[in-house]
Length: 388
Ligand code: ACO
Image (cartoon, rainbow, N blue to C red):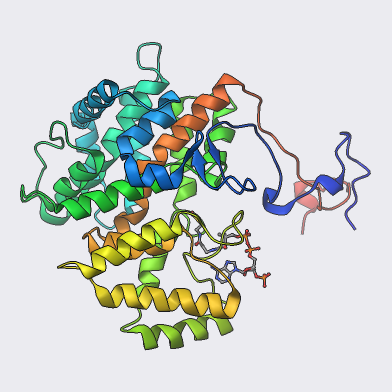
């Protein structure tokens, strides 16, 4: 039993929920996750419709400004993002000093923090401008650092006017000036839509906690990036790819997964805190991963291995893949290096984080829960000289 007699609040331990599972801690009009009979939607729009009909820039606008843009507003917004993709010189200098062995998530966290010193939040550089700047700049930061540290090349221009976020990212990744295949651009665009928002996932909650102290916008995003990085959250897409790479064929996957399950190892890309009967984003990304595998340059074996992993985990544990699982094979097939999977998630989720920061500020209350104390009872202080 937990001793709570010392508690001076009206809280009881019945309200205790480890990991805050099943606890409501905020009101939010941004996104539904696990709301009975509703499915997953962003500000009321079904994720299936958004993934089928909209673009990431429309969704980003929806997140940040609270409504879908008109055609004219969208054209202007795409242009705005393009114009924000050039890196400040001081940021390039710092990126060049980050070792090539660094994890790309640490590069983005550092870049975000540095930008907060170069372009601090102010009345003239407000939360909306910073949100757009970061969405535009994360891809530039990552790929500038990548090309410099791996081949000593400085990208001269990190922007191509009127390119979408997805196309610009794939262009910068290649550096040969070639247009990325339309299907690759489409798949990355859809994945950015699917990753944009997911109510109080650990990183968004963290952004809200940070924001609730009335700190600046960059601090909220830095906290969120650090939180997304771990394999129980965004890092799962990278971890899922590393898992899939171990298997040469579906039979290998069958054997390997059975072994992992009997060792009680986590299968990355499966399970979810809120969804118990499947992640509504999974069928969408799975379909695109399958399509890639059927096209020239695709990897049918990787898709077959992924499907076998899905079948075995369902058969043995009744668990479903989450968005991260088929994102791994999709990103791999469009040529994104495994270590960049979670950074792509950052580019997208910055829109959701921004929405949460803006919403938290509009109706702020310091987020400060309590812990149930399990330490020693009161005891006398031992002076240093008497300590053994
Ligand atoms: N592989 C194997 N077993 C699992 C997995 C998994 N991926 N996920 C859950 N389980 C097991 C747990 O070990 C636990 O078993 P037990 O009751 O015998 O102890 C049971 O299922 C319940 O799981 P919990 O850990 O209590 O679920 P929780 O809600 O705390 O965790 C989480 C959810 C972190 C997502 C978990 O399912 C997990 O670790 N998955 C792998 C990482 C992952 O894919 N994360 C991505 C999340 S989605 C996203 O960020 C887009």
